[in-house]
Picture 1 (cartoon, helix red, strand yellow):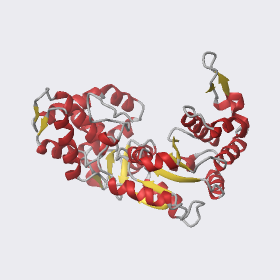
Picture 2 (cartoon, helix red, strand yellow; picture 1 turned 45 degrees about the horizontal axis):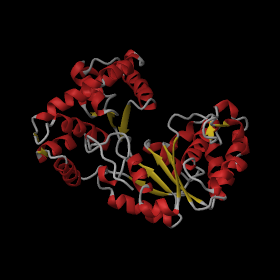
Picture 3 (cartoon, helix red, strand yellow; picture 1 turned 90 degrees about the vertical axis):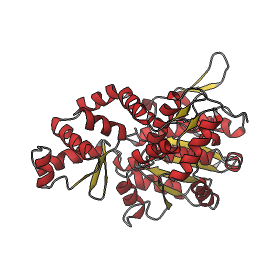
Length: 379
């Protein structure tokens, strides 16, 4: 397979190839061990730390590509069984579309309720996915058909469901039990349940009263070690005939606690600022941060325009603190001129629900590091 070449090697928000992927050797080996030995995995870690990249990297391993059909289903934006079924069915078809196999042809025969959503391309004669949510009249029947289809696969499947905790908020309150039953009866697929809301995922997989209790091996994801990332970044600069001070890399890593997406974003900008045959120095980090943050300013203004004034002032206080503790204490409320402990609590509840802030023990921070920096300096 031809190696993908790009202008800026610090890839953000997608997976291209092993060359542009840093480390995660042990994590990849752990996933392989569990999946190959028939164990499902519950992958739990905060957003922007690299869960999606790890899964795609695992899927890209030669032995996995050769021996399995792999599917990645992001259900973050779904709110119902019908949307789940639609997303899962479409992903399966999109992955099969380039292939000429009997299993692809059986897709139309087995998932009968999807037939209405397929049309023939007038130029190629190839079926195209043209299904709307309104076409899924009986979602549970379609789900049954999808799992029947998976059971008839010509080789085992690996299905990764991203932001899996979302199913607990579906309109259908029996979704966890329904899906657990289907998965228990499915012998031709292993599942990776990926989630970013630790308390919700832990409740789903560690609570004896929940259908998914002890149904998967728990796996947490930590930041890539600073040494490994520094080596990785240095090599990418060198391969493009550029240099970078190690201190610059370590400064970026420390600014964002090693959270992959934010580190990559800033390294992407530093690479862009470094001229051909030039050297990136620590002095360039300030300019890079400013450029990246200001490029998102309109988005951040839009976010703030959609929340209440009470939520906004609480977010501003958290941004000023960086990591905020004891936010309902009188000292904190007085410091930031907040109304009361009860108003702070109600604001926090909504900010957590909308993923604008994150909580670890009794500490709160804004989910988006760049948004936090922008708010801390602008307000």
